[in-house]
Length: 466
Picture 1: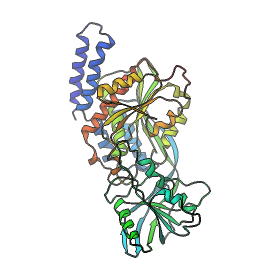
Picture 2: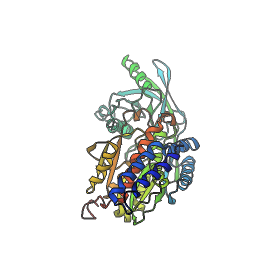
Picture 3: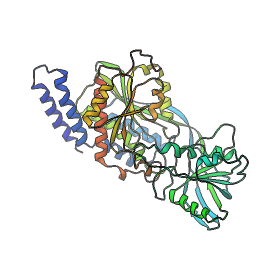
Picture 4: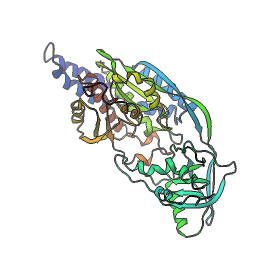
């Protein structure tokens, strides 16, 4: 699938290198090799083939389930197939959670069904569900201002729309109701919560995601209405009559379950102990097939490694590809990686993750102390501006970034990302193969240059930031 282009480009690039002189300098070789990487990635389908295979042969991959286990096996086989070395699973254990029955309806004054989904980690309603009057809050901040003991026995409805932005800046503020809505409502006596889905689409697809219970407070069920259903509920409430809802969700905690990170490497020729880490996360929510979140990231990072392997390029440092497990339920794969590799993080010279869909990057962000010129050269070759915004490298990179690992990130265009993210609409047909190829080109070029750079991207003091 366009892999034929790689051999021809590689031959041309190597010929360009060796005809200048019998022993060409690094600078004389650099431009043809970099051009080869970009051309091979942009004309190839390596990344798209990987995400196509993962989403077709495995599908949804909820953390801790049998499907996530099959995804690990699939990824081990794929990493070996594309030529990665030291392929392995680094296991860890999580608290499992599974979805059950999910129904809701307006009982009065205008009876009708509503579409919603339980949020990850939510407890269930009583077996027969709960029927109660709605207490409406236009925003999460309005709920925070409500008096204590003012919501006894009610079902809280928190609205609040999310703004679109290329960098997803609206997600954090909108997500407060998902993360903390249940506990804020429980402390005021509520029986259950429904929220407007944390997303930017107008389709009748509810948007799931992980919630959290605060310590010392009752645990009450919480679910997300699709955006059109939230609109409908608001219109009904605007009529000025009391609104009663029947809610029945039956998720359940299923105890300890296995998860794990899948690792593969291109072992360095001169400094194999030094690591350039590129990654995505393997798990997904269970409503769609996890194409943009984050099959794309697996395809981009593993596809970038495949480009270098097929070109016969041998980096000086080790390039490590990580497919993190259990990201969606609390970055558990990222924390497990940090804990297992804590004593070796000083040898991680640079790390990044692709976890923002499949659209190409529009800028490059830095989280390094030294060696910025290496990443700036990558940005220049890709025609991308450098951002003045720092980065932790991505969600799963955050735990090791906090311990001093240098980071960078290609900031992808996420204007429409939250139209699909965590919904049944997250499927392969939303991915443009050319977009994936452009991301693969960026990752392959960056990994190659970072793995061969003289700098370690840290301050002179090797413990700085630790």
